[in-house]
Image 1 (cartoon, rainbow, N blue to C red):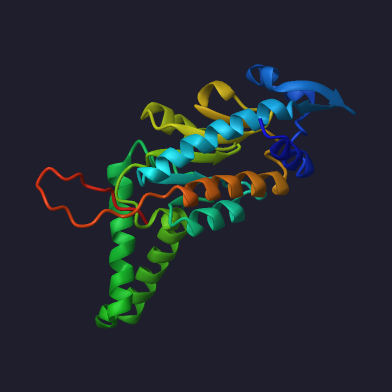
Image 2: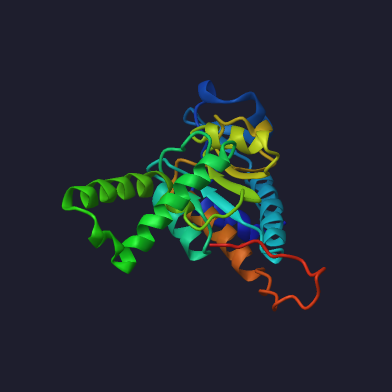
Length: 244
């Protein structure tokens, strides 16, 4: 286990949990004590869980799998968006729209509509509509972008989710669990770790911790990204999923 990793986690305040009154029973094994009424994470365990999560992320990258980044709370949304965009991966950095995974067929229709409007705008095709019609279409595009903009380019269900604060993003986690999509999550002591396949127990209310953990995930994905295969030469060649 890397002492350097533990020191970096400590430096960004990853060891701070919440008060014992807010503790979810599943988080007890991750804690080692408290200070001033705040429970503290055992960073040796946190570093071990983070290492395991990074190994999983590296494997996803090698197979060029799609990872959906999710985190809508104020401390997380900008970093979630920035990290996903840096990896050319989809994200949901605002309110989770129910059915984004479990009702994928309908969501895909909305994404197709947004892409249609975008294409019409670029080609100048919207000029054939009246001023009022263009205004209505522009408003529709704005609403769709607000709700689904981070998912544009997603052509299939993601292969995994990276979630900041699964308690706040309970809807996304529940949908992923229902579809057997593995979840990597940065989670505080008030979260239910039993719903997360790759938990990273740490301070999910700290921007510094969020930035550090997401940076580690981004590095693991980027450094292990498999090369894009050349055009298949045989009918049996595998089809690589399209990634944003």
